[in-house]
Amino acid sequence: MKKDILSLLPQELETELAALGEPKYRAKQVFRWLSRGVRDFEEMTDLPKALRQKLDGHFRLYRPSVLTKQVSRLDGTIKYLWQLADGSAVETVVMSYNHGNTVCISSQVGCRQGCAFCASTLGGLVRSLDASEMLDEVLFSQLDSGKPISNIVLMGIGEPLDNFDNVLRFLRLVNHPEGLNIGMRHISLSTCGLTERFDELAEQGLQLTLSVSLHAPDDETRSMLMPANRGRGVEQLMAACRRYYEKTGRRISFEYAMIDGVNDTERHARLLAKRAAETGAHVNLIPLNHVEERRFQPSTQGHMRQFIRILEEEGVNVTVRRKLGGDIDASCGQLRHRMRKAAE
Ligand code: SAH
Image 1 (tube, rainbow, N blue to C red):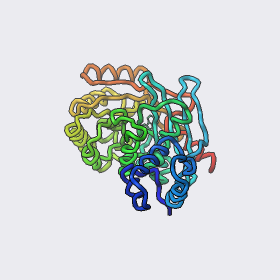
Image 2: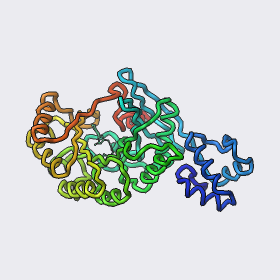
Image 3: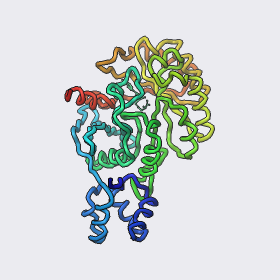
Image 4: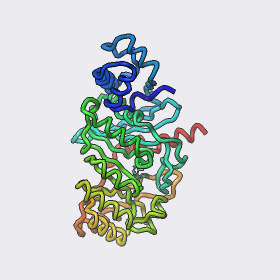
């Protein structure tokens, strides 16, 4: 099996090339070509022909193809469904904000976390993505859309902390000055709360934003919605958040999808305010996206307003996520799920 050259960091590439009898500076040249989206060694025109052939013999390179591309008529949000080398498909969304373009990438093909409101987990986990595949989501979304990407959110399909090593490698690749050079402060990683990984993530010394999909401040509601809470619990999650904040100095963000009659009562708002206060977290409310197979409905506007009022009264730093791409199912998981169902 040939090695996945795209997942290699420049220093590793140097080592690999040295083993092939090549000087160090070749690694930088190759890394630059790869970071520009070249996916055929023959196109690396400043390398000697013999080296190009050697690379081709040792390494594999694959270029994902666009299965579908949808552009929102409402706000220009673009949603890609990419086909990967093994035929798997993942979604990537490009959103434009005043502060620049954000790409929302998938970290796994499917998901095994089983959240009760989510479309991504309906067919379970197929596999985790390689660092190179996540890198290509960013790179080819940028090249195809012509929109320079300044921000990345790992909020697509999959649980990033369930693909820890590849995600870290991906972060180092996109952050590399010779590569896409996207600053860690412009990257958010979202997790359903695999607390056993929080300390390890904090120890990496990355300046990224950790988003925790909280969705409920109490064990009863949270365990009903999110199997990941069973056996861990909200108290343990809060402790892990506090430690993360202390260690990194980076404020955590709580994602909270408002679900009608489930997590949007006054009791939930008061307890959520307490959770935010004890962790220094910012709260990001998301109007629930209705998923056909799921029984949940979004909270009413009235309940949402009341919920926000309570949080503000309690001094919580709260924002409401603007809905983008409403006409193209831009919430991750929905498009891949629909394609999968159609293929059945
Ligand atoms: N596994 C990670 C990454 C997925 S991110 C995580 O759980 O955080 C996607 C975000 O969208 C998460 O906050 C997830 O809980 C939320 N989400 C999933 N389905 C949703 C839906 N139907 N409506 C609104 N938000 C949803």
